[in-house]
Image (cartoon, rainbow, N blue to C red):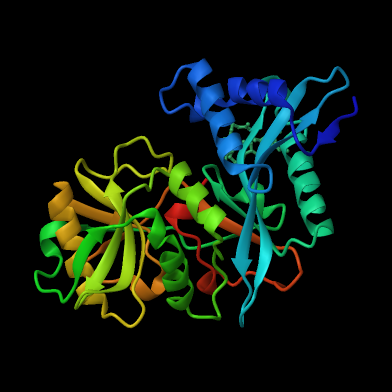
Amino acid sequence: MSRTYVPRLDDALVAEAARQTHVIWSGGRSVDAHIEAQRAQLRRAGPAILRYTGLLDDAGRLVAGIKRYGLSVSVPGGGKAPGVGIGAVFTRPDARGTGAASELLRAVLDEARADGVALALLYSDIDPGFYERLGFVALPALEHAADASALPTETSLDVRPSTPEDERFMLDAYDVSWDPSFVRPARTLEILRYFRFRNHGDLGWILRRDGRDVGYALAALHDGKRDDGAEPPPRTLWVDEWAAPGIPRDDVLGALRKIALAEGAANVASWLPPHLEGEPFVTRNRPTAIAMALALGGGISMIDPGKTFFGSLDHF
Ligand SMILES: CC(C)(COP(=O)(O)OP(=O)(O)OC[C@H]1O[C@@H](n2cnc3c(N)ncnc32)[C@H](O)[C@@H]1OP(=O)(O)O)[C@@H](O)C(=O)NCCC(=O)NCCS
């Protein structure tokens, strides 16, 4: 039986994909609510940032589906290139083991290469060997956690909730905070907004010193509804990321303590990039949501796991 790759599923097939994936990724929602949540994501993102792709059988039925994200990534040494994110890889149970998911993944990757995309990214919840067979490389998958009371009590920083007007500043601070030799997300305003919506990271905090904005943190109580694989203890302040160029780490940690206090959080947890890891955070390997990347050319020739980082805000 032949199968056809469809780069963008129509609404009926999106609903079918959501009916199939409900068993795993519903987060406790009803089937209808899960279908509506997919539609809401697609509407909010627009096709440049998110579309559903799939493989159809001869009868036009959906065999396998993938959520395909249009991302932007930094290229070592400076510059940006298009990236593709792969999420919700799923094969209809009765068609499993017949090569459908691999075929669909190859179709999405071939299409991306033809479009000049430099890197493919996914977060694996299964044995990474499946994706390694397609060339993906697993990146370090660490989670860092601390008692809020272990963070410094002294800080030169104040915090205030962010507003939409702060988003440009956040993008700039994020860009400046990175070592240019790293491959990491390169955000546009649209991508930042979509992923804040997607990952419930709606709480932004501006870090201030002497009345000036010097950085930001995206941090909110983990309400258990995020599908990032994390199972933090109750009342955990989940820190998606922070960037405060030129500000000592301890000052930022002191600001996080203030935010934790304001939010009533007893614990703080994050997927920190390598340059921000360390005391007082305790590190453990994440069993799921293992970031994996594949170089597709166009400015990125190979993946160096020590120099490639995608954080929890970018998780899909
Ligand atoms: C994982 C999944 C997409 C594979 O789809 P598929 O169409 O059967 O994949 P293929 O036929 O291309 O490849 C099959 C191979 O995938 C591998 N595989 C299947 N499930 C796997 C799992 N949970 N962990 C690791 N590898 C797995 C096996 O090596 C299998 O080979 P086998 O049939 O000889 O045992 C499918 O099992 C599925 O939909 N699972 C539920 C959703 C899911 O977990 N998706 C992955 C999210 S990261």
